[in-house]
Length: 240
Image 1 (tube, rainbow, N blue to C red):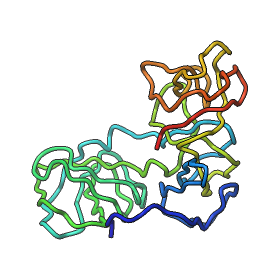
Image 2 (tube, helix red, strand yellow):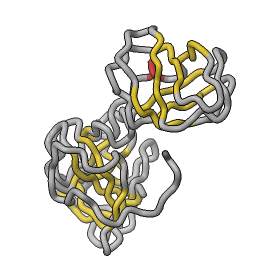
Image 3 (cartoon, rainbow, N blue to C red):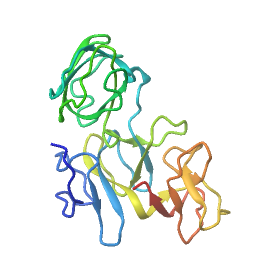
Image 4 (cartoon, rainbow, N blue to C red):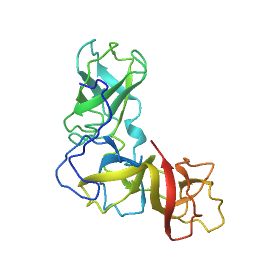
């Protein structure tokens, strides 16, 4: 059931912890009394405090995959012809988007799916029912939850912004990334930026931030003090 609900107020897992047990839904948002916001994530590698992280790398082979057979209104499955091999539940918690054809524009949360070879038919089970029937003219893009298996921001962009690490979270374990409000991040920028300069993920240093770059996302701004090369400094994140 994906009905809308109010903001989460009490977290089962503390901010400064790493847990092998999943205690929240990936992407679940929490806020501290001072207005900082955090998202629950699964680490795709060791998360280092002060570094900036991105979504898992997404392969273009999972874009606009053919629908192998029709799905009627009300059912909770789509049969996809895989663009590349699926591992079991690779996209669980992520999304299926009808990218073209009949039913275009629908988006569903993926509950589960089995492993499947490349080019095979794979039944993807959804949390929500189909709202407009699909047929074999439909195509479907599958993507992981953006907070599943996050990795350090790459110098050459391979994903989208996920947030800044606040505590070491072991690879494969669960914890928090900061997405909004006053925070701290490693910078590759020399100390010449104005206090209000926008910031982007770095194009030269993995896991760092820099002065706003036109080809990158703007993720916030420097806060009160200018950013200093190779130092962790105060920033204002606005990913949420």
